[in-house]
Length: 128
Image (cartoon, rainbow, N blue to C red; front, side):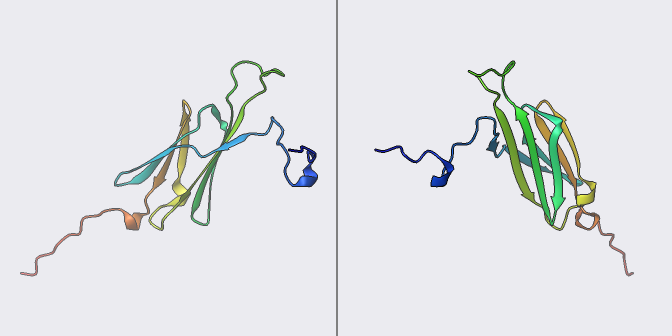
């Protein structure tokens, strides 16, 4: 088997080791009467390296982290990871009120429900 094609002209090129590996992190979604709570695992990420944005009903979460222990060397380069996860938001949420916090590698997003989608009690009036 010939190994003559080793350049990008073949259409395949090895990525440099410094590029981050892209992972889809695990996530949990909980619902309360007031909001949805999403928890996304992003180990190694700092709050400054996390981005959450909403566009056209899509909540996109990205984060970058360096998972290497200690200082990188030639024998053991830095292991960079990029997390990406997307969530489709329904019409029953208030996307302007989304809040996020990061604690020990777990990103928590609180997505409040729109007022018109929250459960409410309807008063029944007697006609007697």
